[in-house]
Length: 310
Image (cartoon, rainbow, N blue to C red; front, side, top):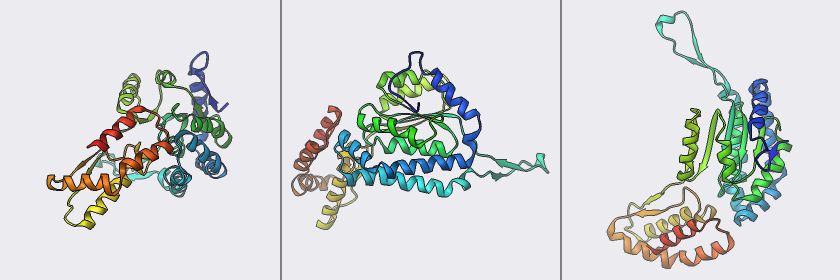
């Protein structure tokens, strides 16, 4: 089995034991195995393209063009880039040895860490599950992917298809809500990658500290836009167009890189606010977009409403 839809009766200890057994077999260190997994990811992305579009639309109302631009297409490019550079990245590198060790030489040899846990988020549920997965596999690790329960169609797609395209003994998908994530974090991992809110990130880091597990956190925060000058009409229109695109082009503004506030000289503030509201008609466009793109949390609605009221 390559996926679990709920916590097993006796916890996740058996899951981790199987993964560690696969890792200690040594096969994941073989570059041929790593390439086979990356090519499996590429096949998944190309052969299941329509299902991916459907799942992302079900969860987020994403248009096919947006899904390809921000997730599927970006993933294909990234995995191809990894395949192209894998041998060079995995090769030992010469290092400078101290004089006292002469005539010895030194090498830095890249080694996989072991068992990696990936938590993905709901707003880019495919890309932020498979991007870290591809990196972990390229480095020779075994992986557990925990998709966001707030994007259920994409999570179900990953659980159904990852075991078909990747080594089911080395890659597992675990489905469930926050309680499942907490139970997973009770175990020792060799690396944890989490994308989500700062509040949950603190919980992840606290639990990981018990085992001194290295953690990579990609957390949402406040993203400013600095407008340098608006001396000409052309400058003003360019600024407004770019603000609108940067704010709402990705997942209707529900992304960590979406603009949260604007820093501009006080003398330019009135004209900028006027153009944002009247020329681009962001309020009307936003409400139309929200009718097409379901919002999963009312917190995002409130933050965008506040942005527009400024």
